[in-house]
Image 1 (cartoon, rainbow, N blue to C red):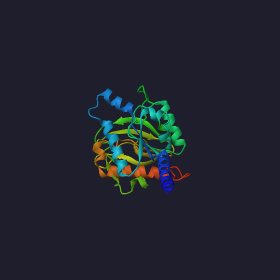
Image 2 (image 1 turned 30 degrees about the vertical axis):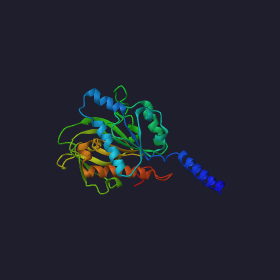
Image 3 (image 1 turned 90 degrees about the horizontal axis):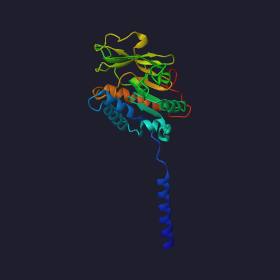
Image 4 (image 1 turned 60 degrees about the vertical axis):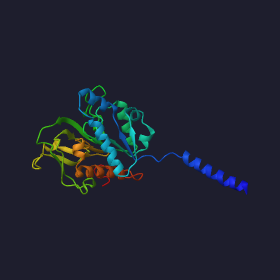
Length: 269
């Protein structure tokens, strides 16, 4: 009798040890928390923790969506951290200065089927502060966008207007307010699909000619947005949060099954 009790107890203990030895399920989402961006903000004298507040809002939305995520430092991203490579989606709220090694790791991630959700000035500069060639963004070729300039002039860029029927716009109004009136102005490269364009404060006039008016661009690699939608004054808007959540869900669904079509034009919708 004593032997049987010991056997049951030992079996339970062994089972518990085996469960502990199992690796934790991989997070679907990776979030790049850029040390270089924090250092750049401090160097230029930004007041407050602008980038840190954006990162916190990403965390808040992911938690609200019930998603697990892993956070990557510059070094972890550069080294192709295994947790990153196991994820399906990489979110970059504003990784301004990026190294060639980081860009290479992201390229391999995308080639393996991962998707990107990239905002504002991410990958705009080298670690030394120079523009990346030939597109002004280190990720320009993947995201199908070319840097044109930065603009903070009212009433331009007062809103983003939906231009295509697409899942990212589900239950989102035609115009999403962006009252900071700031934008990274881009030219869309062949293979990019414009999902939203810039309009003025009055929702009456496009901010730029068509060739350089894209605010949201979809490519095979993912989605680029020319505004920092995670800043508190924009993230507080229900429509902005809904749009962000839709983007995340869409990109994850495009990765849901092996062999699923990429989320570019003609892909998953």
